[in-house]
Length: 220
Ligand code: DX5
Ligand code: ZN
Image (cartoon, rainbow, N blue to C red; front, side, top):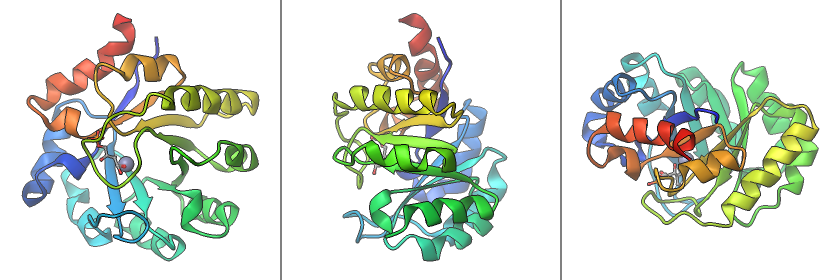
């Protein structure tokens, strides 16, 4: 089985000690740092902006995987890239011209990601598959950590995997929301190769939790 990339979401970290948290995550075996950016408009919560990303950038060499839940998103791409984002992932609903937005992200030298909410159809992926380096399947409605994994997401992961394979794409397929050691294997079996996890990683021993997520697919 594939060993998935583990992308802890700092949404569940101690915001008063963010620099230290990302340093500890790196030592604990995290692969990417998942940064949830929320604007209180596209989603019903507000988190952080480019200045915070810039402030924590020197504390780790891990890639910053920035999930933008912001509308309109285009005006923010450059600022997050300059702040140190390596992957910029956007929702199709966050701007009128997804094709242009994804092109712009690559033009900025970042990896381009597209993210599907539970009710967003995968047919959109067919239109932009050559423009993306990452596809993210939301397994909760975005806005908050600690929500329950929506089981029908597994079918959607498999659907995205089929589209990527058919197109000969090597884009990452990532899952976000309610991921735990209890559903990680099913996500990977459905075709995911990257798992975002917030509350699961930050409850208790980070290293043990990350190891449990990595090991789950092999144990199945
Ligand atoms: C939800 C965010 C997720 C969330 C994951 O809007 O995109 O990244 O923080 O947290 P858990 O793993 O607790 O669901
Ligand atoms: Zn996220």
